[in-house]
Length: 234
Image 1 (cartoon, rainbow, N blue to C red):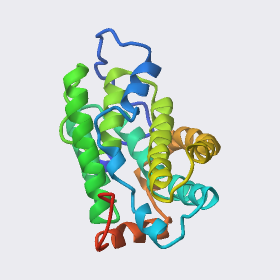
Image 2: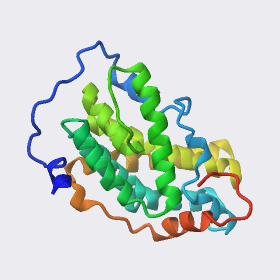
Image 3: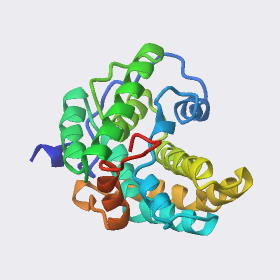
């Protein structure tokens, strides 16, 4: 199957790596995952707006549990697997094939929209700045394929992607619960080791390991579509 060919754990065929001068990879990745990178991530709550309205996320402790479950058992881990698989893609055609798998695994229409729209924004900006040519890809695939083309470290890219994802959810809760800024930063600090470990562990996974058991978060994303009053797009 095509999906297996792009995620083989055997050493991938040699591919041309961009030879243009690249600043320290940490600076490049920091720029990609900065809130200033124009993805519009602040507009998406990943269904958490429903959990806040229902009272399931109402404190720093409940926020931490909610985000931790998404990272370890839901979209976070799945996105990390997809990012590593995209990193191993040998060309744009392989990335597009992988992208189709990523879209098929989206559990709701809003989750799919969230990933596609952020991916489109990432591709437009990255194509304009770095010497890459990205087709239309959803967010984790776009990031992974870009990192591979530029020769950036895959595990670091995955870990920082996870942290940026968690930071956006924490920011949503700080604004909507509301929580204090310091409380939000404490939650993000405690989740840092989770982001790092999943970013590293997912490098050994393949598409066969894609799964999700964060059912409450997935149902919340479906319920968000029918909210009468909402602040976030998802």
